[in-house]
Length: 108
Image (cartoon, rainbow, N blue to C red):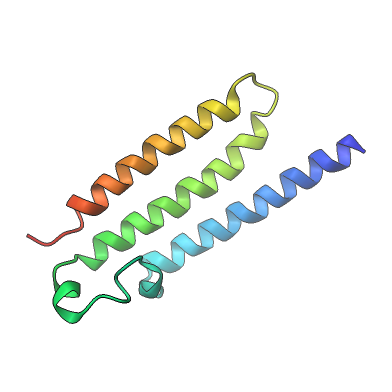
């Protein structure tokens, strides 16, 4: 029973990772601007202030990081503290992406 549950965990996380990677590809191609938080509801004056290409890159980066997180964590399940270390790394990358979104993606 434990082997089946462990295998299902790997299958589900790999499927979630594939979804994240496909979403990142769609974002980079420019087909998902409505998923950029605040951009789809912003006025035209506010949309002019944002570099959409950089926001797409950041959204794709977030999707790739979450997909990578889904792949790596089950593989490190036997390592003590692996989940904690992976969460800390993901939070650090997430903080960096938030800082980049508020500074790098704005037009000068």
